[in-house]
Image (cartoon, rainbow, N blue to C red):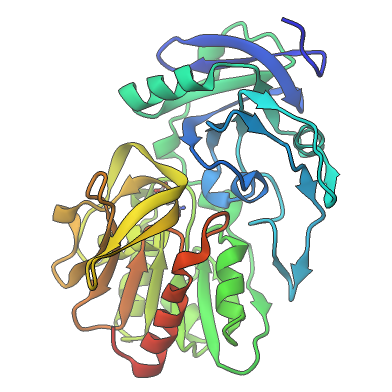
Length: 370
Ligand SMILES: NC(=O)CC[C@H](N)C(=O)O
């Protein structure tokens, strides 16, 4: 095989599958949970989504890189076209990586991965890989770019589900984004997507991002109008400190919004459950049904764990569900001002059909009712 960047690449799956392709991006070897997204675009946002930490991402769309990587746009300390300051995935697998042709591209996908030390593999049959993951469920894997992969198994000592990745994605101290006087929302930042910060801040709130291990007292010291438990990487059941903080915050009866990981933490903190899904939801075109009016929305997802119907806490009711597999995609508390979504209402990348969920949270804050 003749490789455009001049070096080979390999992808190895825990079940013994070893595939040779071309390397691109940085030369190196990384291990991670192998997952796939069916998103056709939005790779700058997806690759910088901290919830992908610890995962090797396969993009199923056949051409990736066509529009390059834009220059970061920052407003009020919030990134408008990336979800965090760095590439978060451990590695990237695509069928074909292309050089960009777009007016606002400042570098190619290849150069971006290279500059951030992240390996990529192209020229592999992503359809075959995804079929394996769909049939057997997500598994650990190894990606190598530009280095022979002699004993791939030796990189697979640690299991994705047993690592607390929030230690790498949560800030060490609070970060504040001033608003226009609507009051304060504390975001418990386990690796928050900047799209969520933007949606809150653009509604006038000062957004205070606090580390994932802050206590309820430290959070309440800011006298917030509401608390958001945001997205984040890894297994929610490992985050026992965060679950305890959530329970303590509930005692204050303050408005809470849970997004993605925050939805799962809500379920665990209020007596419900969360389970690992076979291969998760990662896409920007997943349907959800709003049970309050039976409307269907097309939404952005990135989750490998899920709350199933029988896992919903007894004091909450289903708000949204996915009609494909029944996974609960949002919940509302019966009495307290608590709302959650498993999908991404900030939709970065994705269709903005559901950003009204942030207006709903504003109403919850203003009325004190769910
Ligand atoms: N985007 C997220 O917050 C993901 C939550 C959790 N890590 C999962 O994979 O299900």
